[in-house]
Length: 175
Image 1 (cartoon, helix red, strand yellow):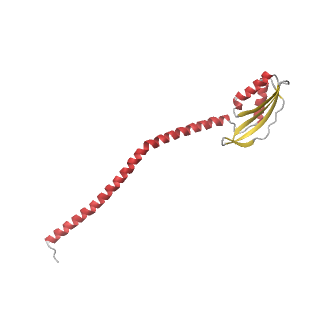
Image 2 (tube, helix red, strand yellow):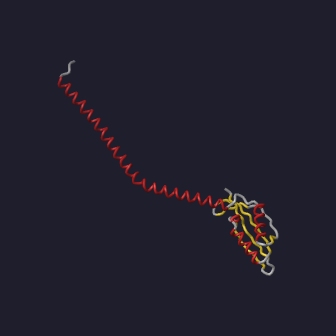
Image 3 (cartoon, one colour):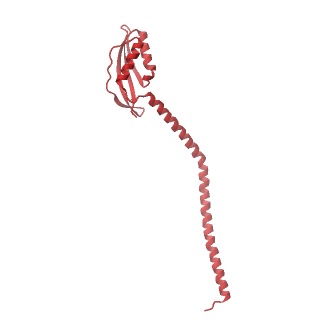
């Protein structure tokens, strides 16, 4: 069977039109997707400066929190060693010219302080000497760096006999 020249031209035109239609459909579909991706990119670029600022702010807060944690850890010993603290207390008592009448260290008790796990040793220190020296002893305990994690809870003084009973807690960090 012989196909005429006109039929071949019509068939060729139909194939060309079909190809143009298929290419057009793909083109417009791709253009729609490109527009959608451009919209997403624009939204992401709008959010990016705010997110970058938030990230920077959070990183600064993290550095500050870590610094504060490290500073606080330095103030709190890992554990409360009774021998060391006993030596410190007797040294301070000698420097302040007071008599530390007795010293017993109970076992540390586990507790939390501001949500941080720690151990605490509660001490009762009976001291005697002049009132001036007792006040000097108390002030030294409160200001000595070795007792930075110490809380002086109460001070009971008998002025007539120059005797004071000091109760204090020494905290140790349990990290």
